[in-house]
Length: 354
Image 1 (cartoon, rainbow, N blue to C red):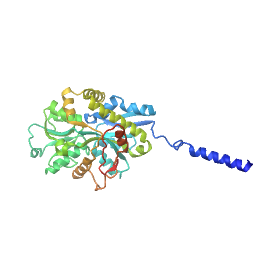
Image 2: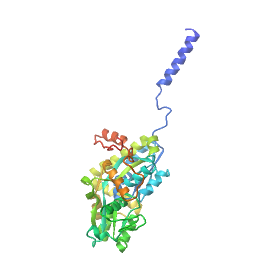
Image 3: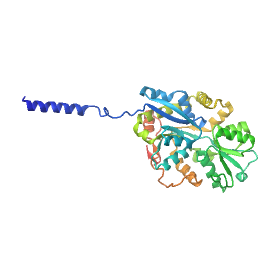
Image 4: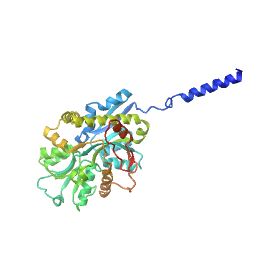
């Protein structure tokens, strides 16, 4: 072999070696070193609390070298601001803050990657209030301006001819109030009722003598509507899909655990609530709240447009059109996990990837 042919052979051999190298050898890893997960100390976040308590998230994250940090919020709008500010990477959160975060950033901020909870919200009032007309002139609390229950309350009142505004005026005065303060205000007689998530609606009923005027389930087909879903910051989702997958796997394990061992699941939720609030719920409150909820990885995408319409009707969502929610879902990772586990496929109902 002459020198020229030999050199060509060496060059070809080197080229073949480069071509045969793994495609991901120089690519960035799909797992993060740290993930910061937002959640609430509410029974409506039961799947997240069970996963935290039972270390289902760590089960998948730790072997991949990822540390999880938990950040607790009391209302969805604050969690959205944390996502915007880069303080958290994922969050369990209600639909209306999710919608406002998505629409307000022209779809740049987040994607819904899984469901979590359906149900678990009620309008509870003083026993003297027996009909909708009795609410005129009354003071009704909601967890936070623009949160899921606040939107539900305002839109429901409007549908019955009762006006509200964000300044607290109108036919019914809506007072955005921290859930724990709503209980104290109701006990003192400073408010006449509240539209609250669990366990707070149950606490007002069992601890303060309130009665249920509306269970939100009655307003939805088959009683199914999203109360809590799991969202990921969009850039984090694109950069670290494996980490997102590991979190979703932890949530799926938690929901399966809730189904198989409800008593143990309730105990886990009690422990997590106590770690934040310093006190466990009474067994009666927990049992009542738990019976009002369905834990599911299906995000009930069909209910999201209605939630958005309610926010528009309540004057809390601007610049909204029929296409505003296009792309809000990315359920591909969830459905891959569900398929492997031989669990039912979930649909984005035309509002994103599935």
